[in-house]
Image (cartoon, rainbow, N blue to C red):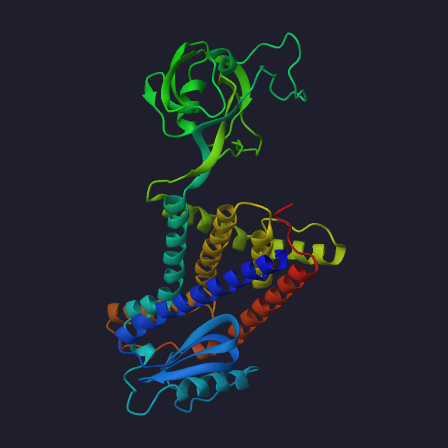
Length: 436
């Protein structure tokens, strides 16, 4: 059974990745067609063709390796017109020009990408990453507002019998230890908090905020017990406690140290559960993920060096480091096969898929060819040159011939392939251990 669940987790991620790539290419395809560009192919994957069907002028299909996708637009760059090619990479440049010329169909010379206004070219190239961002926001919204974020609920899971000093290694009450305010007030496991100090509460975090702000003050508290409201009186004591957020995670200061403060304390524990959040929380979570991925890419060379070192030394991988598709699939399989409630596993898998789409969004915006961000830079440069010529009343310059950047494109592609190979090998030989 565990093997079947492991395989199911991998399949879930493969299907999710295929959907993410497919929608990314749709993000390019739709505006390109709306703007009149001739699109010859829409393909998911690379390598030999598995299946395809031509609808109108476009061939739609799937290829063997589901590690990406592409659409073939007519005339990404100006026709070469027999221009001479010089330099060390002249064969590569000439091949790129020939391939580009072949996309320009006879009779459709005006339906080419490079002749679009600059803003339309940018819309077409940003369409793919934006689709990944939209999909990520939808996924995180389903998680946060549809299922909910795991945090303390108003149901009491347990009551501490005595007050233990903060940071102590003591785990059991000893004679002479003072009783907790919750135990003295008669709070019982299973009670559901209704109000504290006259304020209705819907989460444990709301109750905690009131309690922590009132050390030494007598508070009226109403709990639901066996279907009836029960009135209690509780007086929080002042105690040093390590602070946590609504989801139970430690609150850290700028130095990464957990925050300790003197607050009101009563000694009751909440039952964890999924609490639906406001509809905008999904977009906030997506934004936080964007920030994390940007930070990861900014330190990517250092992270990759660490991956290489761990690969040869067997040291533990950085859990916040990059993963390949193999690593994500492996992690998905491990999550699906863990001994945890089905909902918990599904939430983690959705989180992985949302994070994967954020990674696709940010990574494709890197301003280097062959990535989408590189094509945006080419379009912007073309626009700047035209605006400059217009400002000084000069003839419009020739369109930017990005085939001249083929050598740089090849270097970037080789680096990307090398990075992918390193991560795949590391994910197979020395995978990241996120589950402990």
